[in-house]
Image (spheres, rainbow, N blue to C red):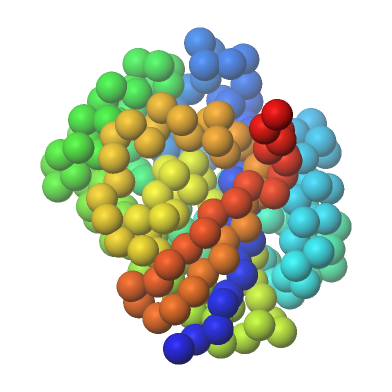
Length: 215
């Protein structure tokens, strides 16, 4: 069976839409909102340091500006190339984009639960999940087969939230939205250890910011 693979993933840094805490935060979807330059300066070097530590030779990123901006900043710090992929775009939540997150949370949960229902102007969660998991597993296979040439990915919250299901199977639960920002805030870096051939086993560990040690 294939050897253990390591895949590093960063959630893009915050945008102006990510600022101001849960009360002010706006849902982003496929909007063209850029990464916040101050957040790039604050978080980018840490992402680059973690990617460097694992010997990442290429960065593959969603082509939406907030992810692409993060990827370009990190790649310049590291001196490695970036590839932008439409297939790594986040879930297109349609008309929810630009509204307050707290308003869209119950709606997004509903569309995750009824995952074959299309939100107005957007895509079914199932369609997003299929697109994302196909692309993610392509890079998992790459890192399994090329341990000396590992890629790192820059992704979005809805993708980070769905990593385990995308690799190991199972359904994404609406409640996973509730803990997303606490577990994996914007700019956080996640290390995946992946074993076996499909269905693969994945261990997910947040490496930055470091989790507080218990007791």
